[in-house]
Length: 438
Image (cartoon, rainbow, N blue to C red):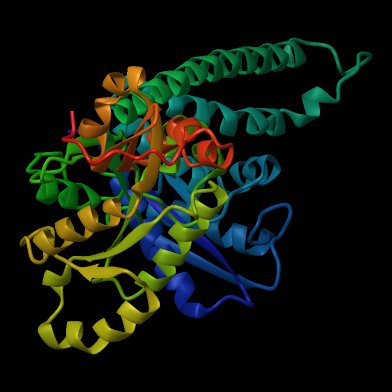
């Protein structure tokens, strides 16, 4: 059995921040550490009006941290804030042991959980982008060497070699991920061509997205009560859709201050969310800070320019609340977040109602058009019956006139056959009686 590394967690609490924010943030850092396989043996919190540029928490507190690390025999120290290259170097020299920050911890978890080739590529790219400036920082004194007494030696050469290797690898990975984007784009276009609607599950990590996917589709996607249990996107078909083709996409969970490197590296995967027809924002309703988690996810969606997608707020894990607790806040929540539904993916409570809400929301994405199609072309438009709903067909002059409801994807392609032909005087008023649909 692999020995668990002992970790001391450190958080800098700026004076303007709320005290309970620090408690929640440290609790989350503790969960992240345990998810990564570490054992938390101590916590140190420093309140200050500003960040110290050299040690983040100040030299005096850093010396206290050194004593605590030695007393607890800790293998590593994990900071809740992102550390600069200089701060990492200074802390390693003073405190000793391994010094990492929250971003490095999350990257480590992603590296453990990435199963697909695509996931591993994206994680490696994120790690290298994180490492590059820190490699430079740790050898900053070498990068200033310019020759002469006391400046010769292999140090600068090795540093430059390391930099070049990392930059070269970043370039290779970026090109591979660019190809992944093209591949995913083709998949999305193929799904649209076949008439599929897509619904993406988004939300804070460990909100129960995978469990909800299983409840709605009957799939058996892996679930675990840990942060980032799901990393690679999973696509499953929604059950009982009355002839409609609906795919659910389970995505990686978000977290407060999601590292920029991860957002950039996972752009190929996150584009699935950007192009979806509907978002299910899954919320762990059993958490007292669920409003802050919703705000964090919405902020990330906004940065990714996904804020304009229609969505349903799905308040999950109601089985962990009493009936009285649920009743007290339900009405207020429904006013704050609309549309909203309260479910339990674990027990199946209200899953059927959510299913109906999804189908109703997707029906709202259909566009209604009146098409004017030349007779000789009309047979090739038989796909309108498969991909949409043909409401009425009549015959006018040289054109078949069809009233249809169809997805936005097809509606764009059909614009040349719409009402503008009437405005140009192409369509005559010699309308015959309705004939049976072909």
